[in-house]
Amino acid sequence: RAYNFNAGPAALPLEVLERAQAEFVDYRGTGMSIMEMSHRGAVYEETHNEAASRLLKLLGNPEGYKVLFLQGGASTQFSMIPMNFLTEGKTAGYVMTGSWAGKAIKEAKLIGEVFEAASSKESKFMNLPDLSNLKLPDNAAYLHVTSNETIEGTQFKSFPDTGSVPLIADMSSDILSRPFDLTQFGMVYAGAQKNLGPSGVTVVIAREELLQDSPKHLPTMLRYDTHAGNNSLYNTPPSFSIYMVNQVLKWIEEQGSLEGIEKKNQEKAALLYNAIDNSGGFYRGCADTGSRSLMNVTFRLASEELEKQFVKESEKEGFVGLKGHRSVGGLRASIYNAVPYDSIKALVDFMAEFQKSNG
Ligand code: PLP
Image (cartoon, rainbow, N blue to C red; front, side, top):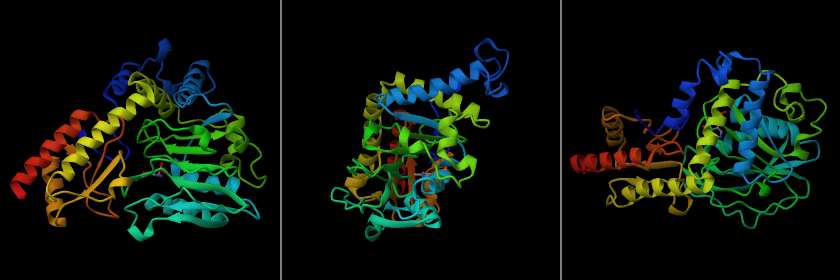
């Protein structure tokens, strides 16, 4: 297996892939692959419901929350959220933390009035704004945050108390990487392709009252009430992706649930950040220490030329995906849940060798 540090789609646990392989052509004795069967049949529906209930169970089964399995990626949520909630006379707050928050804001501005509740633009998004004293206007429809900026490599450690204003989080790149209190949020959402499974399904978890009474003029597929009212089976769901999400959730349970996963993620990130910090300045972490992401580790070398050489040589050694996002350059190792500790150990060893030859 490759040492896979892709930002997304990203590595999946080997056990999950092998289990899916074993069931691939004959799922639960039906003589069919799950992707060949009707989404209206009992076998599919059981898997679909199992995935939703496992997800809520991992989050402590708080009362009044519902899971939706949607399509169109997290990017479609950037539009659906304001379309459903940012109604006449209201304004929506956004925390501007970098590339993905910026995309969410751009879409919301197409729909209605938006205000920037906080921003870390001054630091070029290398740290995160303090959200402890936010003042939200009375007509705020919601406050939107990006829990982990995949491109810049920053991650919130905690979230603000927004009182009666629903807090909505794009958790695409760190959902289920650690425990979190779902009851602090009105809604969280994530494209599945980093920590939850393959691409093709977007998971939304929201308080039930937010999923009712979407504005009447909205198209059927863009209304939360359509999907909530039909158990995410209004139209054909991405059934294979949802099946894979269920497998990944089962694997997370086996890792000691979110507490177990968090511990592993902390160990993995510490190994890599320590290697960067103890390199005598040869490698330089991009994000400020207090805002560093445990999922996307961004770092630089002294020149772009040296970075290119690093990527080239790493690829020869079986490492994949270490080039930084094209918009910011540098290097990035995405170390989501499924990336094993041993892959990071191999990377740290490679980094030491590379420094020896080029330092
Ligand atoms: N939000 C974040 C934080 C992301 O990292 C990504 C994708 O990388 C997206 C949103 C967009 O997700 P999708 O490609 O599912 O639309």
